[in-house]
Amino acid sequence: MTQDTLSAAAARRQAGDLAGARTLAEQAVGAAPDSVEARLLLAITCFEQGNAQEAAGQFEALLALAPEHAVAHYGLGNALRQQGRLEAAASSYRRALEIDPSFAPALGNLGATYQELGRLEEAIGAFEQALSRRSEHPQSHFNLANALQAAGRLERAAEHYRRTLALAPQIAAAHSNLGVVLQKQGDGAGAADCFHQAIALDPNYGEAHLNLAHLLNGQDKLDEAIASYRRAIALMPKAAPVHVSLANALLKSGQAAEALAAIDHSLTLGPPGIRALALKSAALSQVGDRAGEQRLVDLEAMIEQVAIEPPSSYETLASFNRELTHLVTNHPTLRGDKTTVNGRDTGDLFGEEGPAITALRTFVGRRARAYLDRLSSLADHPLGAHRPERYHLKAWGVRMWRQGYQVPHFHQNAWLSGVYYVQLPDAVAGSEGHEGWIEFGRGTDDLYIASEPTIRLIEPKVGRLLIFPSYVWHRTLPFESDQERISIAFDLIPEA
Image 1 (cartoon, rainbow, N blue to C red):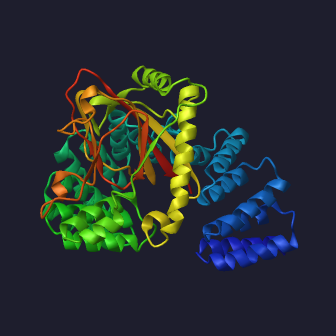
Image 2 (cartoon, one colour):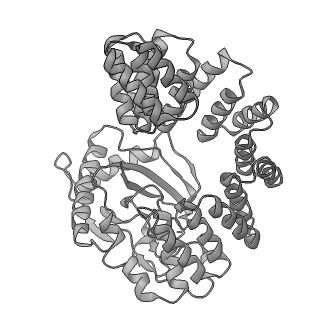
Image 3 (cartoon, rainbow, N blue to C red):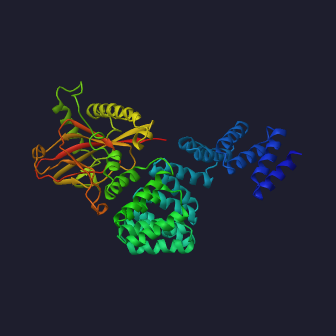
């Protein structure tokens, strides 16, 4: 009877009747609780119904019966991944591969999970391993290309996208993603061809319309960009970032009221994005709503300035700052950054140990926590209503020399940001031309057609920390000096 029930359940599943298949699979498990086959079918059916938590429970029950069941470990990994439990999912995929090293789907999903975790080199390694086993498998080339693109290895990414398309020219996503790589490499015409090919293959592929819109927006072909953004929105109406990108193009074309409407609609689709709030501040200034602009970005109340006391392990603030200066100026990760001109940025400093950076991390953490606590009184403001409970801090050094400055920007992935001033040129102090100062409130020039934004200039001072909402536009002004300007910036990054 159990085998007949299982056969009927499998037939229902094959026919697309997942509810019926699940009912029969539950009956089979009830009749034979130790049946591996029945448990597996029930677990798979739960997963295909979108019940990841129940599926995980069924896979775990199966593994209690058959600990070396590779497919069950793989299925458990899929269920955990769907719940966002990525580290546990990776562990399950690795266990499946220990049992069956030839299990290609487990290797592919392990690579995808590593990529979601931001562990790009491990993702690339997993995808390369999968490709070594199936060198002519288009999905394996595609997966590897995606990871290589995320890691910034554009030449190799393009190579594997092209290999994907040689094997399977009908994959629209491969055309579109190759277009993204070509755009990053400066080949706008090639990128456009790829996006158009993707759209020709699948006219309802929203990402291809969106990528084409981004390309057109970057080329200041604003009418065409707006039309492409609108087509993307028609296909992905609940994708808040697409509405925000439309707003950016509308602002640049002088349609501030329409831009504001697009941003406000995006804010109804989920928690506010940092880019949406940054662009909203510009849109409010352009429609003349100065009161609304100030409510969103109160440049007096929202920018905190606090002087640091010398940490207990240092006799003076100067000795503390000398150690931080040495750390930044000699850091092996110093590199160019798109926001810094005539200067270099380091990688993450708060992931390191050492007395000076540990003391700074402690001070920044304490002040950032206090800032967050104060936001509880702003329940009707997006900054307070959505303040994160779980977060981590990231910091990087910024080293600038003569004529160094930062272009207008905001911090996309953070909630709060800030900067600590370690060393400043003499020319900065009291400068009538505000050399080396930090300016808040002004975005990129192409956003302001009708009027100038409200701004606030702050003179940096050695030993002072500034904290502000990450969506507040800011830039620094060039300075003329042989002395370097050294600072350490930080982000408070929300966690799920």
